[in-house]
Image 1 (cartoon, rainbow, N blue to C red):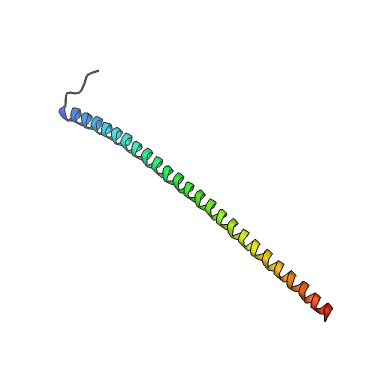
Image 2 (cartoon, one colour):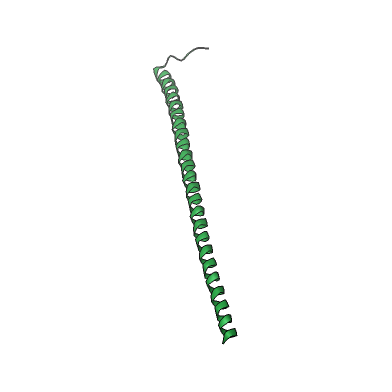
Length: 95
C-alpha cells in the first residue's frame, strides 16, 4: 500500500485526525463537567430534603404542643361547665 504524497491529502488527513482528537477531548471534558453538575444538583436536592424533614419535624412538634394546650383548655372549660351545672342543680333543688 502506497501512502499518498499529495500535500493537500496529507493536510486534510492531519486536520481530520486533529479535529477528532479535539472533539474527543472536549467530549471527555464535558462529560466530567456534567458529572460534577449532577453530583452538585444531587447534593442540593439531598440538603433540601434534609431541611424539609427538619421543618416537618418541627411543625409536627409544634402542632402536638398546640393540640395538648387546646386539650388542657377544653378540659378546664368542661370542668367549669360541669361545676356550674352542679351548682345550678343544687340551687333549683333548694329553691
